[in-house]
Length: 223
Image 1 (cartoon, helix red, strand yellow):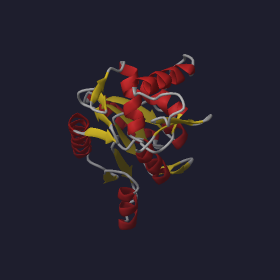
Image 2: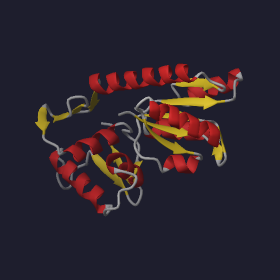
Image 3: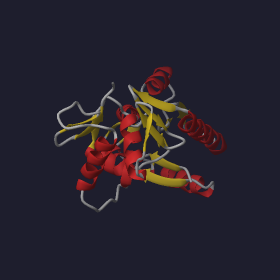
Image 4: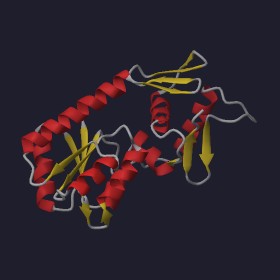
């Protein structure tokens, strides 16, 4: 079931849209501010308003598209000026819908973006130097040799690969690979990283494919 995050500060629009999408079979999460959106769990698509109480939604769109470029963002706003539309689409959003909107048209746009995302994840291989990740097949190769990974190790590697060359914060890795409500020790992340490094062939004293930013997070190097 696709997971959709709605970021909207108008409670009437938020509740009615959430109810309508849930009725179409989507799993819906809601947020009424940038802060609440940052706490949301891993989703497949985001609907984002621009007029949020704690900041301009464009900032949120830029941050989300940078951290999770594989997740499509549709801007849903009353701003209909051409400059706003251009700013929205160049900030990382894949579509721009002006309020008031037609529900069936919005659902069609959502369905299209989810279908495009699914096709991309199924068909696209990720190549980083001598590392090959077959996302759809859930297989990993290095130097042409297949590496057996546990499910969470694979998910963690893919999450790092979506932001290759950029430090992904610890809380974002835990949120996206495990769950926003994860109550276990955060050492679980470090254990999986160490196991992943070992399986990828990192050896003591040699440059690691996955590097740590102390106290912040981890980065998959763009080699």
